[in-house]
Image (cartoon, rainbow, N blue to C red):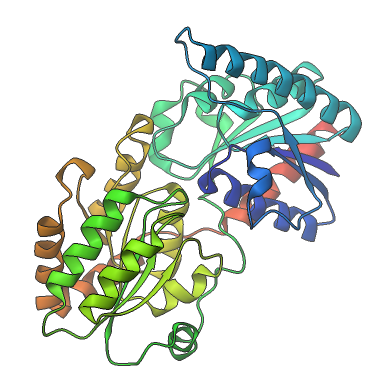
Length: 363
């Protein structure tokens, strides 16, 4: 079986695709992932040989020189996608969202190759809303997504959102040793998403410094690129024990050491918080059609997370929410227990089985 996968450039698209690839390879499949060319610089992907890259550039409906170049890149990427399909000759093509997957899935549909999309967010993106009408199967992370797709329910399946296999809980002491942290302190994980967030970095560092007086805190802060120097000076001056990273691939140590996460609400982050049962303060990214707000509300309604809107985020607001949680450890325990109400399917395994079912139907 030969499976071609296509993804956008964000970690929220790429990580589920990689998780499915690993599951399919265990079943003997030959897999190839197609990504926008700008992903070639990623540390996580640099050593993989099972990836092809296509031309890409931002594209919108406005008339400008940048959009003319974007249209040219889209057409070039479409031609490159055709060449990949003809060369790889897949039995199935799977898309994980974004404009960059549209051409590849169109060629697959044209050649009557079996197709499937996976929607990571509760609110589906434009590309998947378009593609769902043409593909053979639409796999969803959230059951609530069904009401936003105008296709027969028999065409949809809820699989959850695959996460990387290496993201498995490690013993707490091992996780603390990884960061050279001491036991007996309260550990906070801060992460602004795959691109980082200057606003989260600023509000969290200032809020935690103000909160830290008289409290035993340790901070893991994943800042994104270009932010570490300023944060280092803030934390060092405050005396807070901390570890700073622009990017951390071994997130299993961070999730296993943390008592609370402060983070965005991308679909992959939500799936990872669910797997580790980690209480969270979620600050949804305010753009991209408010996808993250829908994701965040799922955990908020379950009782596992508090939500602060990006427009309301200040160091003072964050300090108030943290003080409330730290003043009553029972609240944090209740937030962790609330994850017990959330079903956690083997998303990668379920997706892999759906792909197998598609190719068997084709046979």
